[in-house]
Image (tube, rainbow, N blue to C red; front, side):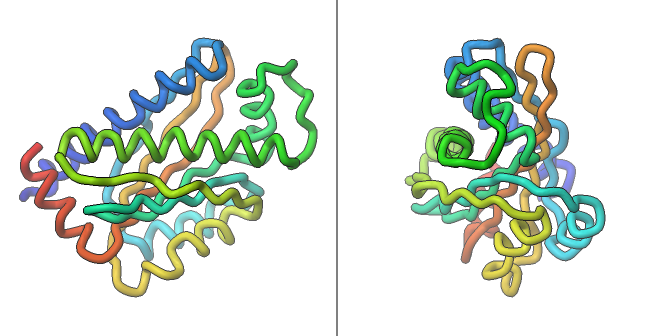
Length: 200
C-alpha cells in the first residue's frame, strides 16, 4: 500500500478516535471541551526518540495503557505537569487553580483521561476493523518527558521500527492544552495494521 494511502488511513482512524474521546471529555468537564488532532504520522522510533529527547525536557504526567486483544498495542498519553493540574480542576469541576501539586486527585484525573483516550482508540479499531481489543487499567507516571518516553519504548524498540504518533491539543473554553499520544504496535500488530489500513 502506498505511503500516501497509509497516511490518509492513519489520519482517518486517529480522527475517529479523537472525535469519540472529545465527546466524552466534553461531557466530563461540561465546558465545551474539544480535542483537535494536529499531526498523525507513522514515524521511525529512533528519530522520534531523538526528537523528544532533544526538544522536550519538562515534567509531564502521563498514562501507560496496554491495548490487548487481536491486535496488541502499547498506548501512551501525556500532558505537561502544570496542565495536568488544570485538567484535574476541570474534571473535578473545581475552581481553576485549586490543584497546586501532583497528588491523588491528579493521578486519578490523568488515569481517567488515559482510560478515555485508550478506550476511544480501541472502540474505533474494534468497530471499524471487527477485531477484539480492550484497554488494560492505566498506569500513571510523573517524570521528565525523556524518562517517560524512554520507559514506554524500552521493551518494544528492539523489534519494532515505527511508532504511530498522534499529536493533539485539548481546547477547553479558551484554554489550549497540548498533549501527546503514541501507539506502538506489539508483535505482528504492525503487519496487521498495514493490512487493515489497506481496506479503509
